[in-house]
Image (cartoon, rainbow, N blue to C red):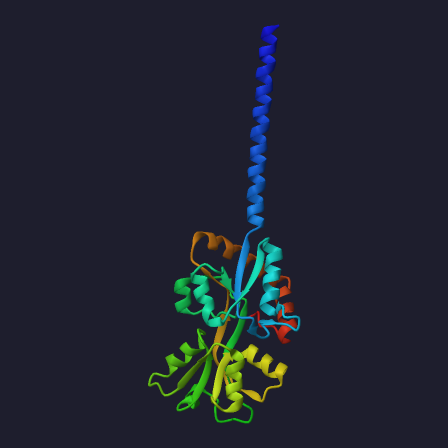
Length: 268
């Protein structure tokens, strides 16, 4: 009788141990899944770069970049958090870990590729000069010699001009605010500005500004999302690239592009 009681006690302890192990295994698995699903990607943007990222009439962040990342979120399971700041401060925030990436039509350059891990390009555009309406004297970078041109502080456009202007014959004025840059061209304080071609065209048409595109694209641009180089972000970039490839294949990228700029800027 005592022996039977001992056997039953041992069996009960064994069952409890199995249940405890199974429970722990299940809990760990669930926690792992929740951790992966709950991963938040903080996306930095200026919120003042129509039609890519801007505040709409309800004062909510909106635009092509927002739609693209909301779609990426659906396909990867990552949650998105949009963080707005002046463009000139976005790369500093990325370096400091305050954001995970930037969605503000970031051009892939050799210098940036040395420092950051980029996703595949999702937008193809061009660096475009813009002048006051009726000013037909500026068509090329050569025409800027002896004149002033505005660029966004921290953008790649300043570098484009510096690489061309070996003798410092062009005066470059940097701006934190794109609106102020456009206004100075309208008022004649600067002779031109350089911007993304699609954005420049959309802004001029949307706001009916007395501006016009000057000449052809100065340089083709490929835009992508930069991440700090580390092993964790390699995984993130792989998933984002898969989502972008699927979005391109099923027509979603083209649809979003045409929604905002009436043409497909997502193909080379």
